[in-house]
Length: 287
Ligand code: ADP
Ligand code: ZN
Image 1 (cartoon, rainbow, N blue to C red):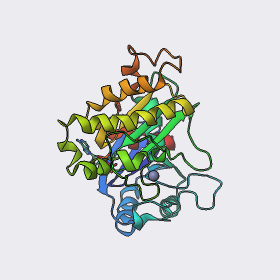
Image 2: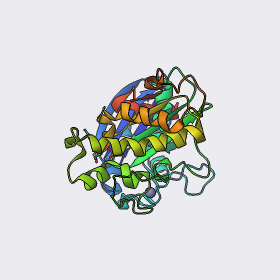
Image 3: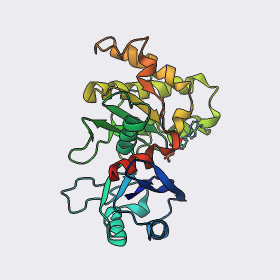
């Protein structure tokens, strides 16, 4: 059986045809332009390929409540051309196949749990630190959903004593995303994040915010593994800084063999699937 998969991201759409064994057969990447430019390309890619279902992991916020009249519609996304765009309905109408949607980060968590760096455990939290910050989770055979999807990038964090950046989230100012997403590192220091590698203070402050977030996620969600991806996490020196700070903040309160100095390197990890986590997760949704 042929299945379709889309990773709908803020900068690019990854389109793929796969099979019900989870194998990708064909892939194409197109830029995320306004819907009237991007969507005809998406439809053209899948037309005539004989897919029987389509899975989509999308940027958000997006309505993923299956009972809702606006299931599959984008919401207050900073990508203003896409606000209220009925992505799911449009795909279903034009391609004539059932469409199932989830957030990009939920799908990445599922993908890492199935095929990536969390395939040896039953639950996993995936956080991306890039243009924005978002996290998803896969537990008990399902991704984490409720009213809608979690918005773990917008939690409140305690300010670092050496940091006077005011914070740049349009909704909350100094929430986690407003303090620690890539564009805010760049505004705070006046340089591309990729060029700040040698400046220790940058990563100490960054790790301070991200570690607080992980500790809150550990308390609330209790995942068996945390996978950290996104452009900012290409700064590999962040991993040891974050792990150390997480242990310090937990202060031994959560008793688990995964949360010790000896084992934390295998608990907070980079993605195992690199570029394909999203689209493979979308394929798994369709499966
Ligand atoms: P998106 O979030 O749009 O899907 P990314 O996860 O690649 O895309 O995040 C892009 C952001 O990550 C950029 O705005 C930049 O701030 C940051 N970034 C990208 N590459 C690096 C790098 N090598 N080092 C540090 N930060 C980076
Ligand atoms: Zn916010």
